[in-house]
Length: 352
Image 1 (spheres, helix red, strand yellow):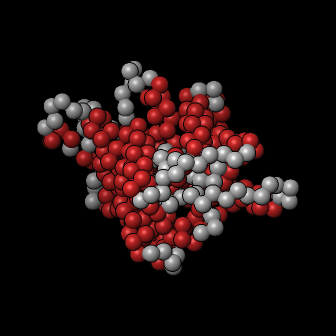
Image 2 (cartoon, one colour):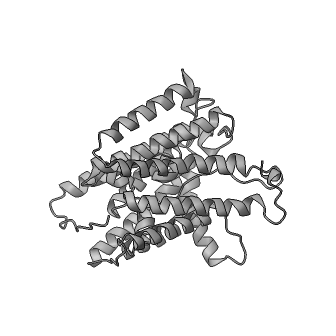
């Protein structure tokens, strides 16, 4: 479709950067106001309200994404989420590692990105280690770990998606949407908060349809993608240090947009304030968690946003396994930290 716009100086990949920037700006602003975070929805002190926000976004994301599939605007048949051979071991290990890491760092990557733009230097520190570790797992010294675990697969054949099961996509879309909305509507959130959460959810199909339909170009293709943070952070790190050699891509635009959107919103609403570490042991905990998330996000095929908020709406078995493993890792790690008598008293971070 892109060629019908008649652009003479811009290519589809270049416009994709602009699209990602806009999506990121909106996500950053909305996530800053709603405190959108998967970790908080599982083990946070306000997990009921946080789960309501996350589930509202998921319900809208599922509905919007499947509407795009139903109308023929997009299809996920060739997407990595629908690979016939499921790398189950990599996804399980990666999900558990990522879940453990986000509990240690007190935030999933999307939340930490927003916090970093709000003056939280702990989050900046975590994201730097996360990006380096993710890039090392994708293309560096840790790549053999990824390829070794990824080689252990099970064949799903045509059942890589819930849409291939009896009753198809309609039934499973309804199940996800109804379950998510029930949790959202009983979460005791303000209506305004749930509206903002719904807008976050709309960004997911906007990304899928934007890259898979609006910017579709046979001569200069754009990868079908939506909101995510693991690969985009690795891309942003590489682009930052080698921007004269490689062009910016969708991921770079998305990360830049999220940071800018959260920064502006936090300044406007007065929530920007500097925060840092209070003890060496705290620094070590956050560094360990960041490394676990970097490795885990790559192995699992995405983070809580890439595999969860954007992946689950595709009805992919791989995405569902990944977000389930992330949740399991978070619960297990939180249980260990909570039940260990010798551990230091938890440090209160109200902004998180």
